Each structure stands twice: as structure tokens, then as C-alpha cells.
Image (cartoon, rainbow, N blue to C red):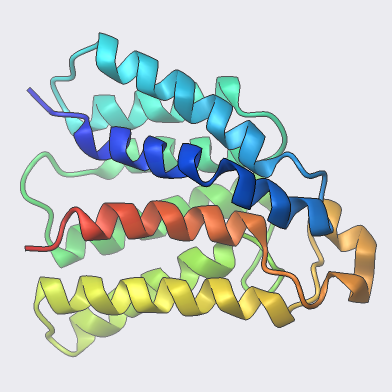
Length: 204
């Protein structure tokens, strides 16, 4: 039986940061990123506590479908597609660095297919892509898993912070043009919060 505690913790982090994410979005978007995500993750918590799971794949698929169905705006379909892609490839064994790279690449592919975005456009990908590249660099340098995870978290944080100086070219924020510069992207921030929760609860 697969325990959903990690997803419950992730939901709690998003819900706790609802107002912060909404404030970030109010500066350059519709001001509903935190509210929308919190709604979806509250619904996810209800389902996680009511159901049992025989596999990680099943858990990720439920997460995906819940977010797609309950999170308004673009973030629900984007995160939902990422989790759905992960559900198709995730190992049921203890996750290796290779597994984490496969997972990150599938998540990125799903978000890019759904959102038509690339790195440098002030989106959640500006957190996720540097995190994925860090994992690949760690593998190339034969680093152990804990070191790789710590480096991944640092890369995700730097990616998120780098969105402050970017001009948005995707989504609602793109309407602001140069006025979007100077604001941290809310999607990049929620992606960081998820990555941070997953990594901090995986370190040994």
C-alpha cells in the first residue's frame, strides 16, 4: 500500500502559502493563483484521506485528475498534465537519480506541450527546468543522491528568483510587457514550493 503523506504535506504547503501566491499573482496576473491552487489541493487532501493506493502511478494519476478538475486558470491543466505524465513513468521501487531525471523530463514535456512555453518566459518552467538540469549535472559528475537533491533544490530556488528580472512573454503577465519585470513569477514560486517539499521529505 502506497502512503500519500508526501502529497498531503505538499497540499498543506500550497494551502499555507495561498495568500503569498495570490499576492505575487496580483502584481502581474489575475490575482487568483494561490486561491485556485489551494482549492485544488484542498480537494486533493479530501481524496487522499478517503482512498487507498496500490501504486505510485495511481497516486500521481489521482493528483493529476484532481488538479485538472478543480484548479481554475492555466495552472490546473499545467500541473495536472505534469503529474499525469509522471504517473506513466514513475518507478514503484526506491527512486534513483535516473528515475528522478526521467520524472522531471516527463513533467517538463507535459507542461511545454500544454502551455507552449520555454525557459526564460517567466513561468513555472523557469524553476522546473533548472532543477532538472541540475539533476543531469549531478549524474554526469557521479554525485550521490542526497547531494544531487540538495543541488536540485538550490537550482530551483535560483530559477524562481531569476524570474524577478525576466519580462513575461506567456500568460496574463505578458500583457504588462516591461512592467512585468521586477516581480517574481507566482507559477515559478508554487513550483518551487512543491519541489522543496518533495526534496526535503526525501533527503536521508
